[in-house]
Image (cartoon, rainbow, N blue to C red; front, side, top):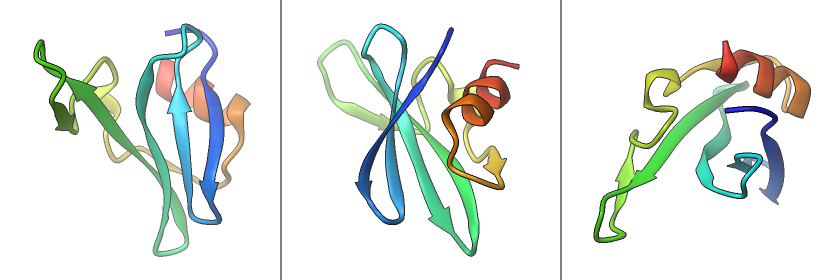
Length: 76
């Protein structure tokens, strides 16, 4: 998936984009931990929560909202 980027939505949510600019999920502060929430789209463009290219990483937990840590953790 290569380098991912984080784009702040608010204090508790970051939008996660692939290096190609594809929206692949959200990083959300839940219960004091940052959790990745995968997102995808079907062929009609409908949103699929928990889907997309990183569906296998849905609910991955991170200590901090850091691009390098998130990229490494989700690309592992």
